[in-house]
Length: 468
Length: 78
Image 1 (tube, rainbow over the protein chains, first blue to last red):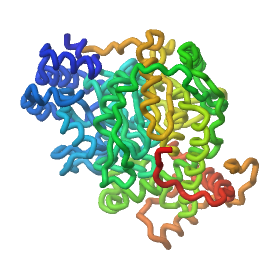
Image 2: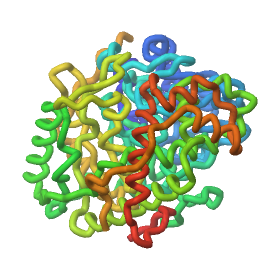
Image 3: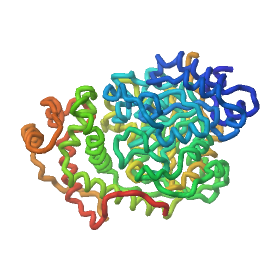
Image 4: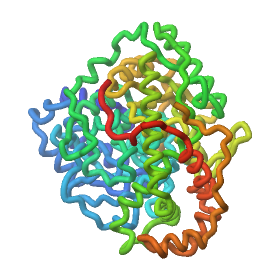
């Protein structure tokens, strides 16, 4: 029973709660037990709040449990999200004693709906990096093969769900840090439209590119959680005021006639052949369901990484300026190297990069006049081995973190909503993922198609074999 | 709108550590160690793919005409 619960999705657990077959206290106990058994291997959690979670679960009555789709359900949040009374380390020695005095906007939303926070998850220090390696709190491993990386920077959130320690988790995504680790671990990962979900109370890395994201086992769970955490926040300058939407209403809806763009370059190049083969099967399936697949030419990606980096590093330096003098020695060497680079870029470089981002946005919006969604692989490679520094594909060598986020980072610049989900297994026993990108604030269209794929047997993947 | 500068050549001189030291000394800057400035000139950590390469690419971007395109701000529902 314990293992069955551990790998259940939120909706299934909610059904057990609603019918009285399990209590919130028992649910918390199962997941707390999993964390106790598996955290040394997975390194998923930095701080576990089992006692607080048990108290919260014990206090819920029937009326509380009927309040929302997430009431009584345990979740985890990346250790960048402030949770009142709990430390927010950001995966760094710099913040090792920083106790949050208020809940982040999204934590407050979840708590108001009686979701139960079970702890704070590991990450690449301050979200600077996509491998999830962390010299202070350990490196998160992949649930399908502990010799492989979980990916990052939301490494702990991905590992926590994939190892069956929580059914859902929050992460942040600045270049793919939710979508990529979700894909490498066989999960659903969503980066909503920029401005859709408030980032207030989340330790910033790069204001222009940071997004709050969601990791779950199913598309339906992802839609349910987005309903809860999205909404206007007057205290977040990027927040957009729009009517709240019932995303779950689009699940399972017919999508025949939908136009899906298939990029003609970059996104289907320099990738593992098994990844490309899996995407071909997805295309065939979508066609069979009545979707029209149309070739699209996305903007030239030649300088995209440079543009992204030129915005990231000065913003990160500005965000950390207040801590550098007193705590500078506590940062890891690689992050300090990035901040030093931010110091030496010119203001004109930064502004030009932001103008390039506006061009990317305009060009991508123009594509969305002709198509409703864009389909790409989530990552060009499956989860790399722990310790991998570079990957080589078709004779081109690339830093492993860059490879992991090669297909995701562009959409942080454009701000379009993007979801990754599993679509097959590699012969090495690791998940392969796809990415669906939609128009601004049209997450429902993504959910519409993704929910069909989620329900299609051909794209389902086996659960990881964890020892618990 | 042209986003690629194609084969345009840059005129960025090879980066010298003394240049960075002078910038840090004369302009408002945090205290970077010798080793950190050295990393920018001759990267070993693998996180930053060479400041020299980045500067050359930035020079191409700087010389790319984006017309009157403003910097990216918020997004709106279309």
